[in-house]
Length: 116
Image (tube, rainbow, N blue to C red; front, side, top):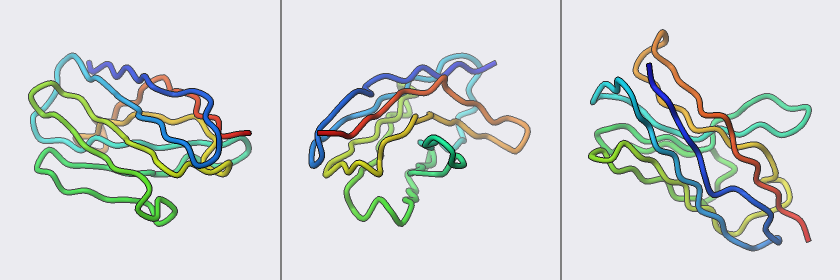
């Protein structure tokens, strides 16, 4: 089993920055994809960014160069640096670790609120 624990959410003003972190523990396959998804009220969960264990990254179009994802394979952690936050970025952000369709894990989520 794999456990994912997120941290770093909170309230920030428009234009501000936040850094989300996620630590994975348990039986982790070395080859995997870690990423961040978000879900706003009344909307479906959507991919924000992902990064493979080999370093390949993928960003949603709405990131527009504002966010940067990184990971530390030795520590099984993934981070999301978010700059230029907008009210539309308000959502619960979930950490994800995926090895396969059957081995797909989620964190409990962390709230990000962008408001003045």
